[in-house]
Image 1 (cartoon, rainbow, N blue to C red):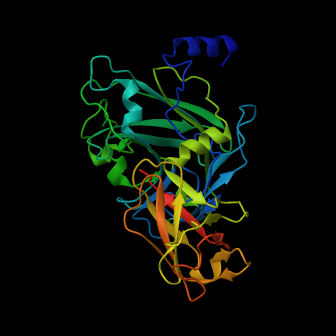
Image 2 (image 1 turned 90 degrees about the horizontal axis):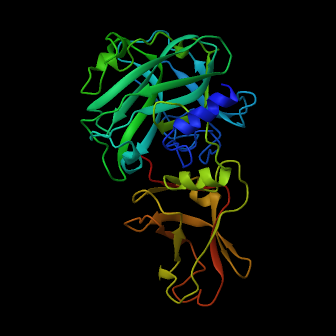
Amino acid sequence: MSKAAELAALISSQTALSDRSMIINGAMQVAQRATSSTSTGYCSLDRFRIQPLNTDQLAYTFAQDDTVPAGEGFSKSAKISITTAEDSVADNEIFRLLHRIEGQNMQRASWGTSSAKPLTLSFFVRSNVTGTYAVEFRMNSGGSNSLSKNYTINSADTWERKTITFPKNTSTNFINDNTEGCELGWYLAAGANYTSGSLASDYGANATNTRAAGQTANITSSSSNTWYITGVQLEVGEQATPFQHRSFEDELARCHRYTTVYPPAGVTAEFKYAIPQSSNVCDVDNRPEVTIFYPEKRADPTITHIGNTTSDWRVGLANNTNLTPTGISQAVGNSRRGSVFFITVSSGVSTNSLSGVACYFYSNGGRIVVDAEL
């Protein structure tokens, strides 16, 4: 795109001078959980969820990667590598990448009114598997209003920028709260149950066989296949504008609304939390109480501690004593800003012994994941 064309695109965009992209972590900078994973769901790059459905042989790696389109200002991409191929894609099988957005963040499009505006999705993509792929836009978690579009990877192992415009919807608005307002799904493989129909022309309760209609590409066919994506942007209007680069700090803060990991992937520094200096620091002997505060979450989170209790966590006292926990549990009712943990030790701490004494709970290899994902 020429500089004149870029300027025209900016001028024509109704949100050109504001925070126009509704995608979080579109440049794939943040990976709190892991920089590489073979799991499902939210397992690696923040805000992007990987979903195999009904596959039987398939194995893959979902990772943050340094391969990026030249000259576009990116340093990271998401890479999906097939490690065990799916012998054949059965009718009910799919493999896709998802991104979900809160309904209250979609209100700028004014859907459900006569002032509704179209939405334009843009992204950079690369794969050794050329052909036609499908992207699905589903509204309001249940998907009663959905629409899919196709894009084509023309050249193998070459970065290509794709733009897809989803038409306005004057009939149905996005849910106006902190729940799922929409879901974007990039299909990487799909069986006949999802591809045998024809693409719908408008939103509605479209049949299952239209959800990936037109998809011919299948990256699960070989263990040598890869698929990359970066520069994901969703904005109001019919024109895709240049990618809106955000600082790492800004993107991380946005991700923290959904997930905070202590310590995050790649960080080796100890995670420490002070145990309050008071006479009631223990509700019972040898069970100090720790309140952990975190950035405010979208909703009350689920909190998990990862690692072996007796080897990956410690309670440290001011006299340089390190106590090994025998159990870690949570109080009922996590809030959006903090949670209480009970750390059981075998001996050395009573209901009064910590009065005025510095004490802390820390990681010796373990991690805490605070999760409020959509």
